[in-house]
Image (tube, rainbow, N blue to C red):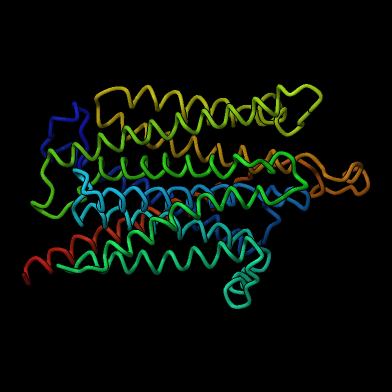
Length: 398
């Protein structure tokens, strides 16, 4: 692994900085894994009782991270595939393509873990595949994700073969699906016609814009911190070009998302005669720190400032903040849409701690989130290892 805090055109030779970052990443992964195992054990032993969600607000942190993982997965694959197909500098090698595929899969699988742990009967998750009803958005998404994983695996295998004519057609199919399923995440909410906060035609566009920003940020992070190419396959100039392109795409995705978000909230908030308790709760109520501090400040303004500089180290930090900021953005869609009761007087009719229109993640939920992040890091490491090992063997046989 390598990272440079110098201008993007300057290469820092491996040394003490490289060894330090390797130790930091391993320690971080180990801490997340230990904490995550403890959280998963609590979830399996005590069910949903330690969680903060209830009957009126059934979706919490894990579902928010599920949509975050879907965004990173779709965005990274489509950027890697289009960059390879178009032959863009830094993206036109198969090692760069494999990095994007591995990141995509490593982001999607932990998202499935979050959904599975959120279910009351985890074993029933297979019913979506075995007994699907395709008029259900859940069933449609489940099948689409699994088909995408098969397509991504085929693309990964074909990337090791020389003179194959099938790689680009499968990449086109995978890119199409990568654009489709982040948008479908927005449609998943838009289809709830009884919820005015979610029933917005712009939500699918918001999810797609965020997927582009998230995919670019994820690739920017891994290509800045790790050696992603086989020896001699990518020149330093090409790697610099790729990182600069990812920086620009990340910044553009943030700006586009902000414009669409402003358009949505301005219509809902400034329209006279229309009062949205969900928007008020998000912008000025109990969820204002999530929106204004985590999303707007740390996830938008600070990353844009860091990306405007010339330091790769700051670009890597910006990409992490973008991911954290869009995790908050996912929660800013998920939670406020559930806090306003659809049936007046329902909360007063029954009294119980789990029958309230409020939600705050508990320590158990955060610990399980640590497990999801550790799983993503571990899967990416294993995928990067196989990328390098198989590429070296193929090169030796040639």
